[in-house]
Length: 521
Image 1: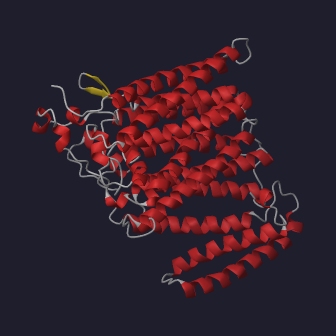
Image 2: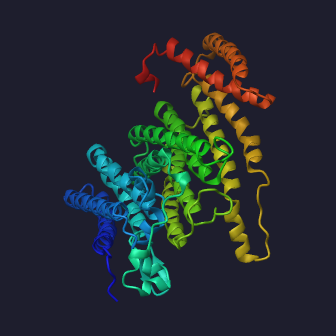
Image 3: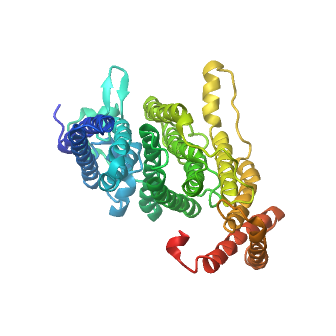
């Protein structure tokens, strides 16, 4: 039957771009890998250039997919399931962006877009680290691109195409009519998602997600090339960028939840939000051990570990939010689309790669034999990093209960499953005191010095400034308690720790750094 009014060209071009994107990403990954392996030979430049061209072709093909999908959405082409499910004739144009990344395929494209931009920047800025880093990013792009292929092998579907026709995914009598499009209207976008936060929050958050691959790739490169100190300096800049963007995206999500999504609070410890917070915590831990390693030589192994696990946790959060496993515990996880196996493969590939390199290169990583002094800055920064890691473990354990239930039920179908009776109370009970400790430590550690050798002389200055911070924090806590209602003594401790951090850092900025904001960074 020939259907009236269907626009098949954008879907056909989109499918072509999806296949080209996958093949080009695979070629780029192989080329950059071979270039890295042959970096001291005459073949290096040839393989590197082939990798560059393939990566740029992958980027152009991905932009082609994005362009075709926007063409379908803005044209309200309801013959495509993606448009029918997410837009309508009366949907304001600014929310077409929201409709684009509402579904899994659109968010994969957004993630891939940021990887491509970061990869191009690294081509010009990474220097000798270009080929190993781009090999890692291109490998990630290959696996992400596979999620968009939508190829069928008997009963197995490889990827989920955003260009599926409505009549191919839905069995209904209306498709027996050649002019069915005259009777089809789009479902539109959920009113909760028709909000400016939906337009600005996902791009920011996904840039944060995507950027975590850069510290991960630097860590892989350091282990791969056995250059265990040289990678620390360039990795730090990218880690700071990633933490800033991801942290901003998380704050945007919290504000959006408070304003529009009825979380009953600013955060409410929703599992999907937890899965974005946890990698940020481990990334912060990695930044601090990176600073320690750069300044003292301690904690290089820990820095490797934190940067590796951060990206792996990003992939784990991707699995949790996209596999449908959090459907009963989160208000805004994605529905299951048959990509569970591919998501597990994505997570497994990078987990095994990172673990294998870290274990087999562990003994080669230089470490200082002596322990850090308890009066030194590096000792307490490392303690703080461990506390952040402990916080991440607690959050991950509680959030992963549905995964644990699925695993046990696979062996014992009668298993009812474990669940938190009150997730908010559970998380607050532990995370509040972790926050208090980190707040106090953030202020205290500023006034310590790396490789402290003369604490007796430094102690008086330290006590003076900590005293200033404590008094200032007490005054600000009292003033704030007049402004906002604080009912529990635990919240007074929480408020005091926050004010202590503010006063101690302002004092340090004015007294030591003399207002030098670049140095303060």
